[in-house]
Amino acid sequence: MSDPTTAPGEPVLVASGLVGGYVEEADILRGCSLTASDGEVVVVIGPNGAGKSTLAKAIFGLVRVREGTVTLRGHDITSAAPHEVTARGMSYVPQVANVFGSLSVQENLEVGGILDRGSIRERMDRMMTLFPRLRERRRQRAGTLSGGERQMLAMARALMPDPSVLLLDEPSAGLAPRAVGEVFDTVAEINEAGVTIVMIEQNARRALALADRGYVLEGGQNRFEGAGDALLTDPQVAELYLGGTTSGGRPEPPPRERAAPS
Image 1 (cartoon, rainbow, N blue to C red):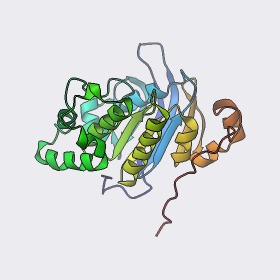
Image 2 (cartoon, rainbow, N blue to C red):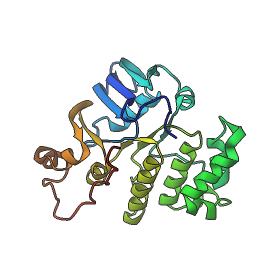
Image 3 (cartoon, helix red, strand yellow):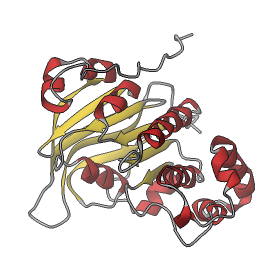
Image 4 (tube, one colour):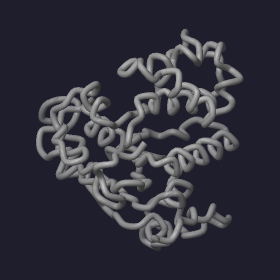
């Protein structure tokens, strides 16, 4: 699913100096920047009100950017509408209202593949393979799924256009602990299939353990950034955002092992 014109490790998504918000003269973002390279998992954490979800929406064209730029594989998408961003190769999964509850699982996937109906059955079968539980529930209305299953369906629908970048806004929010684990496992599988992941996440420890690169926002600005494992063990980040210690009194999932460069 990665873009063949982008070399591994090259920047795919670059947000630079973003200033903007929902209403004029009330900027939530005050100079945010973010870079995601090909094949990376990039995580954005921070306290409530830091501007994390607003950053995701600004990148995807749902919030007006008054200053700064967003580029996707070298194309300026700062003023592009969301459907144009999708056509360029980036999909977005919002935190809420991310499935059509009255439609079946299969119908939700068909809606996700509407931009290219030619291979929709092939892509739907790929999603059913990646998310076996959705195959079992393909005729079931999405509104009757569990929270974890709805999140899986939302990600599967976002993958139907075959994006090279997947933007996730709080995918574990409100889920039971078991479902949270399943969601993080699924995010790792999607990334291993070649999709660059940018994830806004409240479960900071679990997210940073998965991340290649992390950003900590505060007050609409970048406060810290660096490798995910470095942020996870940084005493200052731990004190301010991870509950006061680098271990939290319980073991954390280790960062994923990655293949050594050939």
